[in-house]
Length: 226
Image 1: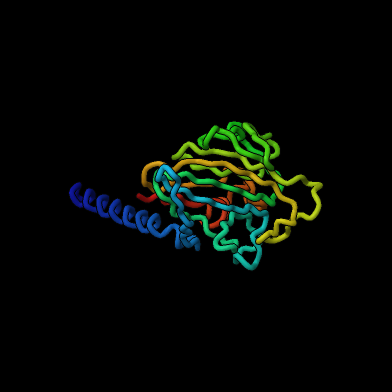
Image 2: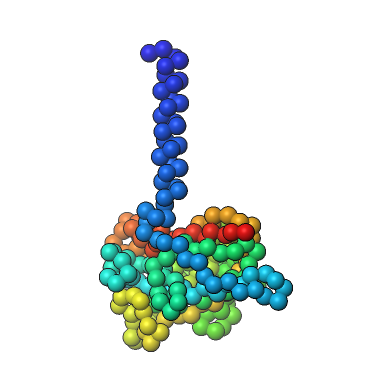
């Protein structure tokens, strides 16, 4: 085969691969079954937008919210309803107040570095109302991490011996849970991936398969817009 023909074939193959990758990325959120959630936005006295997010983490998402009822998942509260949406539209340069209700038990961190809160206001979180600057790596249940924003926090799990543990989501507040609160600021517009780094997908190799790599369960995107 002539060198010129080979170059044309290679160029065609690279172009085709680029088209496939681009199509995959552009359709990633819809293919994963995660519609976008746009929270209400208020304005602080300074004029900067303010957003409040209420999030629930569960050991099993349940048949009402997913065709994969046993998958671990994040949920967002929208108009009083818990929904499996992990792609969120947020305004740029906003103050974001986050409350996470965790109903899942501990899985443990493989990297203790993730146990120290980073990237939020004060580099600390409130755990059940108490200021915390580090979480015991063995007690971590999930993480909420936005690497591109330098935001990392570990979420402590429910004790194994706790009573009234949740079976399937959505979990009522009467079930055993931990409450984690923190505040962070969005920056310039962009498409920022967030995800959990705790290997909490039971039944998958190393705990990182299935829901851990699927948008709409244990990871998603922050669409920060001007």
